[in-house]
Length: 66
Image (cartoon, rainbow, N blue to C red; front, side, top):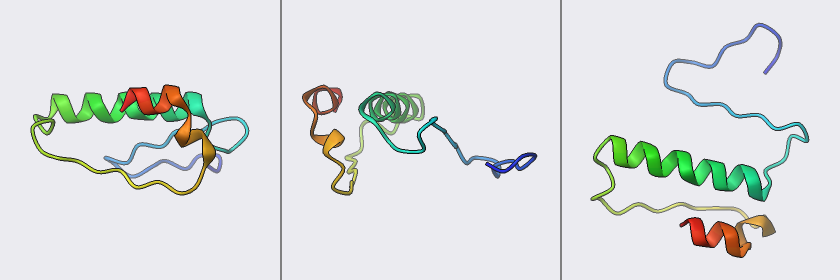
């Protein structure tokens, strides 16, 4: 984010040096979402994630996280 800017309350912003999503960040994101769903009692409801065509989403380690 530009220097001095802040995200609105309730918005989570993660950055990575290259500016691109990678497998490591994707797995961290999945962990975060699972934690948020379980801590808010949302895990009992079905959920769906929709992704673009980034090949990192197809990595076996990412699929295992789901």
